Every structure is written in structure tokens, then in C-alpha cells.
Length: 497
Ligand SMILES: [Zn+2]
Image (cartoon, rainbow, N blue to C red; front, side):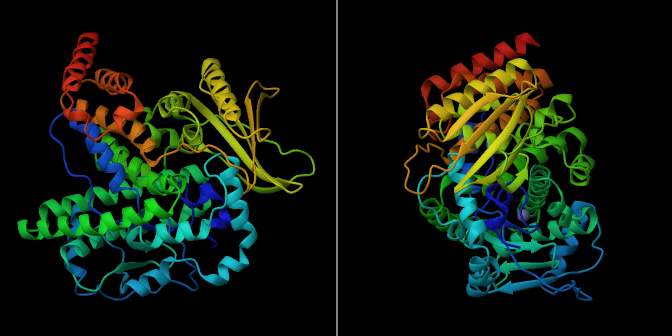
């Protein structure tokens, strides 16, 4: 199992090896006033920048202990009761030193050598999609995200939990509660099958698993920790989280961090949406049969026909050698478009996604990505075409093209401009806040008693009101004009019914 070998999108939000970790740092803290939601979401994104895929080579069958470790037993009992599922059997929990944890999470030198070509291809694919410019060490970025970016992980292949730390602090207990939810999920819903799903479905399964674990983790903090322990937990999370965030922001390109963070950023609002719509059985249904990634990107589409993926074909040029073939999904499109266009424009385009397919291939010396994409209707397809055309024009000369195929689908191609070429990459991690803020606004408005259509009206209305720069500005909620204009949107939506 080579981490970067599977291509950029297999490494982060989109499936990847069936192992995952918990983000460093505490979850977002609550908010009370509507305008503060924007701030809340910026905080959410920062808290969630870490966490994600961990790559681990494992051999042999899983072996289970006959009973839980004494330190884990009380937490396991609480988690099982809270989640409403029984453990089929206890699992091994490994309490590791920093060095041992690093050894488990980092890609081994041998593997790097073995997969050198795939690693180079992955970097080329990122450049072809305009997500990175110049030279880029995929392995080091993945290592930083996996090691510094996580506190613990559960491996469905070894069926063991690995945690960093040997002293049972409140923060470590909270981490264990999170990982034990993954154990339950795996025993009841088989997380190992992520490896067999399309990259977008695997990404959705992973996001639902993270959102579910995050929910139980938060309940543990609220219900089990004493006030003093909660304070200790929060202080520890902030310290550890900030260090990890600083290291990651410095060393890892935002595009890669965004792909890693996506399951956490999108998973939590989706799980809240599912829970509020259908209770625990809504979450279970999504673990059993993950919805399309369009639902993860915008939970409002849950059970709507618009969320169904339209099947399309993509063909390579004759004589080319295939590297990867999969689907892109809205999150990848959104990041690609946001690297050169205004994120709000990218969001509007991606909202109209009907379906897509892509293939990465080598043509002579060059690595290229070719994708076919179709919108929910003709207008949405046309929006994709013009956005991709603008994207190509903003990139290096001769590196991309957009056309229509015989079925009137949009055909896109982007090629690696090479390590030596400069290309504009304006993608920042904060772009993830835009769709997540929309969902959060929707949920908050719903819980204040608004109807579905009123809540959607408020969520989209507030987004329309501000520029992207304003929306990610932490001081926005304090600005004089903000409360008044948000009230105006809400009144308009209530009047519209
Ligand atoms: Zn997790």
C-alpha cells in the first residue's frame, strides 16, 4: 500500500488506504448568535486542517485480546452505550511514544524507493490540475499530515487502535472515545470496504465515520469529563493543535491539506444534518450505503434526485498509458476551480455538477489529466464549460484545453507544465469554509424553527451578501453593518415562506 502511489485524490478526502486518524486539536466550540457562525466556521476549518490519511503496511490476520486494556474498558463501555451498538470483541490499543507513533504513521524509506515513479506521477497530477506549482515532495507532505496531523488512528486492516501518548490524560481519554467509535463502525459497517469503493464514495464513508466519531467524542467531553478535566482537555488540545497547525501550514501545500481536512470539515455538518433529519438511523444508513459526494458537499441534497451521479465516459488519446481512472466529485472540482477562480464562483459552478469521470495518463513524457463532466442541466453544463475555459486561460500557455464531446458533455484536459514552470495557485485552505458555512447556516436556521426552504434561503442569502474575503474574516461578526444585513436576509426569507 503506497500512500502517494494511488494519486492525489486517493490520498486525502477521497478514500485512500482504509485507515484514518483523528485531527489534532479540540473540536469547534459552540456559538450563540447567528453572525458568529461565520467565525465558528473559520475556527472549524482551522481545527480540522489536520487529520486524515495514514498509510500503514500491515501483514497477517487480525488478533484480538480476550478483554479490554484496563485503561480503555470504562471508555469502551460508555462509547457502546452512547452509540447504541455492542462491540463484537475487544481490540488491541497501542499506547505509543512519539517515536513509535511516527514509525507507524510515516511512509517507510523502502516504500518510497519502490514507489518512486508513482510518487512523481502524483506530483505531476497535482500540477496538471493547477493545485501546485514547481517542485513538491509528496511523501514529506503526507508524512507531516499523518504524523503531526493526527493523535491516534484505528486501522481496519490490523483492527487495532494506535494512540500517541502513554499517560491517560483527559485529552487521551477523549481521543480513545473517538477511536472506539471507529472500532464499532468497523465491526458493524465494515470500514475496510473503503478500499473497494470509488474514491468519492470512499471519501463520503470516511467523512460520515469521522462526523459520527466526532459527535460521540463531543458528548464524551460534555458528559463524562468533570469541569476541571474539561479545562485541562481544552488547554491541552489548543496547545497541541496550534503546534500541529503551524507545522502543517508551513510545510504542506494548502491543496493537499484541504484534501486531508475535507472529511472532517464536511463530515460533521453532514452527520448533524442526517441526525436531525432521521436520527441515529440516518447516520447508520449513510455508513451502510454512503450517498454521493454531492450530498457530502451539500447535505441539503440528501435523498434528492439532483444528488444522483450521472454516468459519463472519458477516453485517453491513442497510444497513451493509463495511470489512474476514477471520478472527481464536487470537492476536487471545487478545489481545482478555486485555485484560479473566485471560490464563490467555483461554488456556484460545482453546485450544478451532474457527474464526471477522469483519467490520468502518460502521453510521451508528459502526465495529463482528462475529465468528462456534465451538469444537472444544459445551463449547468455551460457554466462548467465557461469556468473551465477561464481556468485554462489563467494557467500556463498550452497546458490545458476545454471542448464539447459528441454527447455535448464538457471535455477538459490539463497537462503537467513541469517542475520548472510557474503557475498561479491561489487556493487557500479557507475555501473549504464556504460550503461548510452554508450548511452550518442552514442547520442553525432550521434549529431556530425555520422550514427547509426558509433555512436554505437564509443560508444562500447570507453567502450572497458577502465576498469570500469577508466570509473568512474572523472579525466579520463584530462589524457594525453585518447584523443588520443578516437580519434583512432572514426577514426576507421568512416573508417568502
Ligand atoms: Zn476519526
